[in-house]
Length: 165
Image (tube, rainbow, N blue to C red; front, side):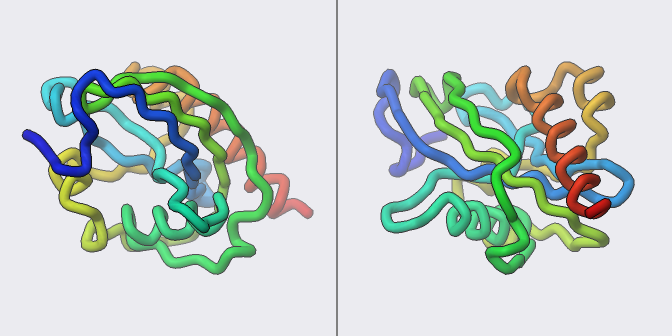
């Protein structure tokens, strides 16, 4: 599978992303299930989010990605302050990705998830969504990156703290 938006294989891509962790009252966090287009036999769970586009803030990018990837519409103030930032490196689509990530946690109740606004490549590489407790995800070994269960714990703690205030 190829996509005209993918750089040539072997390219090093540096990008800044906004990631959003929707947290339900039961402490489960919404994740997406997908795969590298060159390795569909190795699926994993990953966080909602994507690249910050020119002229966008990380908050604007997070809200846009939340709307595009899962159909959740929120006002800018819903994201609050970031709960974490990190930089990770991984391979995807034959490219080496160096990705600086800003994570936001947002409390949600019942939400209807839809993939209707996803881009073509997302539709080809994302198969499902799921609500995960951090410990349950960690036990599967299917997180896209080893940091994700810890980030889910931070998101749940941040939402619990906001709601207690």
